[in-house]
Amino acid sequence: MPGGVTALPASSRRSETLGGGSTDLVVPVLKPLKIGDLVVDPPILQAPMAGYTNFAFRQIVRQFGGTGLLATEMVNARGFVWLDEQEATHPDRLWGVAEEPRPLAVQIWDNDPETLAKVGARLAQEYKVSVVDINFGCPVRQVTQRAKSGSYLLRTPDRMGQIIERVVAACHPTPVTAKTRLGCSRDKINIGEVAEIVEQAGAAALTVHGRTAADMFRGEASWDLISQIKPRLKRIPLIGNGDLSTPQQVVEAFTRWNVDGVMIARACLNKPWLFRQAAAALRGEPIPPDPTLEEERSLLLHHFDLVCQRFGEERGAVLMRKYACCYAQGRQGARDFRKQVVEIKTSAEFYDVVRRTFPKA
Ligand SMILES: Cc1cc2nc3c(=O)[nH]c(=O)nc-3n(C[C@H](O)[C@H](O)[C@H](O)COP(=O)(O)O)c2cc1C
Image (cartoon, rainbow, N blue to C red):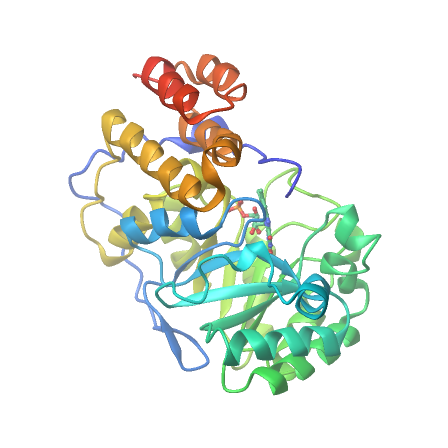
């Protein structure tokens, strides 16, 4: 959500049980998660997040491991076509995509089948991405009301089907997936019908965030409703998403809610090592401990360097403010750190604030 990150409940941010040692969680028997021919192992996906999941962040996530598939921020397909035609350049959000290790999904949004197909084909053939994902879940006004895209398309499932069919044909053999919500609002939940249309149109997987568009990020994600989608899908996997912030919750998504894969968004901004911990829990292995605060501080500075390599120190410093707040979230002293870090303008200031006020406990 471009408007900023909505915090998860404080209790879910840092699990007391994550101190290493063994876990007594029930280990689910997992089928391999396949998206087309791509085996997603482990079946834990890093969610697309606009403004956050750029190449620098994805490098941090890859470094920790534990994700079977990473995703870019959502890319405006119309903007891509326009930039290509007018300026012979491609969107900033494709930074790193061409050379980055695979697997990698690029998410695109618009409401026009031809535009999406054109961009999907470029991503599949020129960039050789592993998966082209279509956004049918964004609830932000700029995307819904102004561009009649994202979750707006949940009003017209047939249109979603037309879009998917065109993009699948254009991207073949690269798999195309859909990411959506339960419906437009609580009284218009239509994910069952949508799921069947998505599958019939040829998508290779469906990801569902267990809220409606009207919910935005309010309330809790309905995993019960997510699990009810499963019988509607005959061929393709169901990936559940919403409020997962501990390895235990990830395990439960498989054992209790019967999904084929899970996707994690906000919690990984605070704990990019969560994937590695969740993957260990799924295998029934001891959960690796959180990094120490010293290691977290070094990670933050390493992340800062990656951002500055691309955007320069001045822009990098501003861009890093929000990540720095995410890293500190839930820690003692986070408020004081946040107050100072949101004011920084230079690399020297960033280093100084991190050194002096990054939480120490
Ligand atoms: C800052 C932010 C940006 C997001 N950007 C996107 C996006 O570009 N595409 C998308 O499909 N979902 C986007 N989402 C939604 C997430 O992918 C995810 O569905 C949602 O946050 C619920 O998962 P979580 O509870 O694990 O955070 C965004 C969410 C946040 C918080």
